[in-house]
Length: 295
Image 1: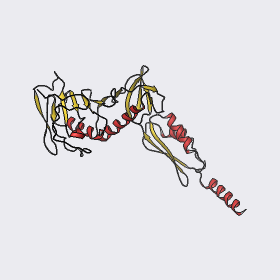
Image 2: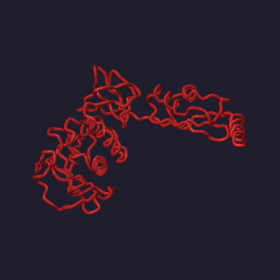
Image 3: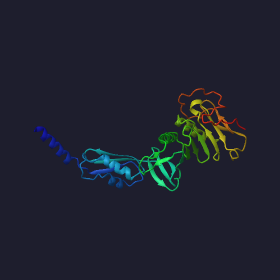
Image 4: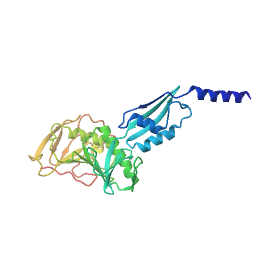
């Protein structure tokens, strides 16, 4: 009897005491905060304890595709915080005469008639199903994991101006930088390190703005080597060879037409399990592309 009275008292106290008087959106997004609050279903005067946070979160996520995460949190005694993070477009995939815009996690953000400016086009990712606000379904699920891994590494390495991601061969993906330099990654391992190496080379003083060609960083982590081969006939090939001037912790790197960047540029953290840094790589290339000898 006493227990029943206490339980009833607690229930009544909770109902009376925890009335919501403040609802606020925390975090930046493209959406109007009042619209987010409205979709949450949470209203002032409701009981803080009894609101359905999961239902509110789901409602917001389904109607606002450019939100990556939504969390509705109670703050005793009378406040509800709706915490949001904005989703970032990571790629455009051609599908049924349109383009599916996805985030790095694979969430479908938008269906567009053309690729979005500044968002890389992804090749080699066959779509099985694409619904707005839902995770994209690809014919090969491992490709979605690869997209996520490359996007995470790209962001961490600070590689901007990516115009294309080619996953036609998933075991040897390539990235196109600024529409003019193809970056060969080789096996999709140590991606952050490889892209850090690419950034250091691409931003070096001697890498001409108009330079076109192929940068091979597939062996950057394993062998401590990378290669750059200018595209034949471009303005960047004024001479038969040129000094890259990219400095290394160990030595200066040199680049010529198809020549080796003999060591990794500075400001790159140590390669995971790097070995045989002095090995002759003239006949290597995990993806079948043999670096030319120059000239």
